[in-house]
Image (cartoon, rainbow, N blue to C red; front, side, top):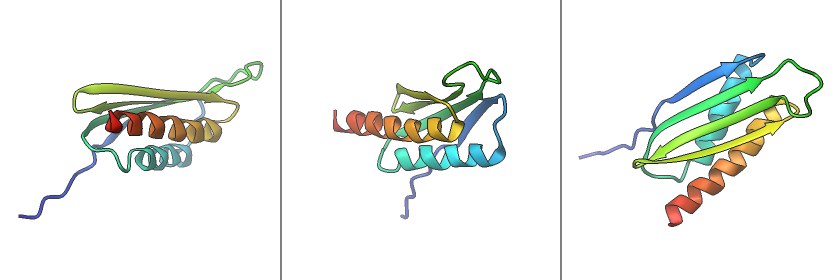
Length: 102
């Protein structure tokens, strides 16, 4: 019997000026961060950009991942959404690897 591990669909919530390209980049980043992780049952990503130029970090990227019933959250804020997504990738990978090691 050939068993393939299906990756769960990533659900997205977006607000503000978030393009389809940025959303696709966030999906790739989250999949990369979770590439070696087993037991992922759900993933939700929130991308938000506030249109207030006075804020130092108006872009927010957040992921909530469920690993076999345990929820893990990672988030990052930055001046631009691509920077926030890059930081999210790093933080989520660290949390996923520490959960797998524990």
